[in-house]
Length: 193
Length: 78
Image 1 (cartoon, each protein chain N blue to C red):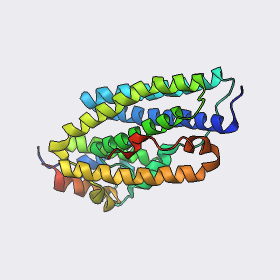
Image 2 (spheres, each protein chain N blue to C red):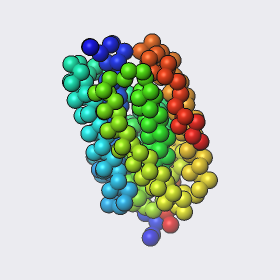
Image 3 (cartoon, each protein chain N blue to C red):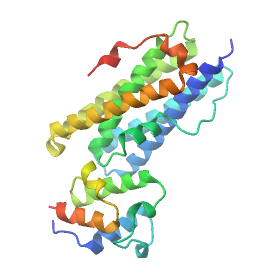
Image 4 (cartoon, each protein chain N blue to C red):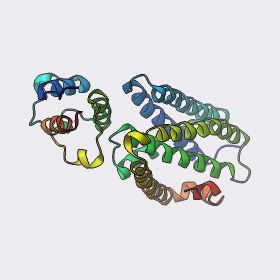
């Protein structure tokens, strides 16, 4: 069965978002000096690029071609939250964003009769996403002495607020296309503090 | 570490942004040097690394020009 326009749009949106994530982390990996963060960030960048390939391949196997999109979720994110000004802020925005990605993919997996190709792609990506959350959380913990635990907590709070705002805006803007995801209801992980 | 001079900082900014040093004068607005705002983020991260300083949102909200940024680094440098 051919993909519906809404499914094609959603999968293309995921693909574009993974490409943007890869480009963002690739630039940062190029900027940083050798360190454990540079090491993990380089792996993170490579994962995101691989995820973009998984979606491209998934669409191909479903007999579809990705829709070309000019911007992605991350663009609105930086607009709402402001550009990060130091490495801690980049890690904080990444942690909040990665949790959003996991929630979004979990929502998609909960859609009744999700296509096997889509399910397989999401499950493959989710394995990496769990590590992304883990290493970024560890990196932030390691920054507590330099930036202060309270400052990090405040920064995470600021980005979480921006995240909620952007996600609500995205759902409202693309309500018709993402209706099939909304029907699956919120994922429990979304309530995580 | 000795406090870096204005000249040293502006030379580093020129290098990081890939623009001619003659364009990086104290009165020049930073956003006019590059069209890509993310390039400014990369520059900020590298400068913090170079001079062992930390910038906050509040710090950078008052930074507009090359001179503002050099002043900020000089007051923060250990």
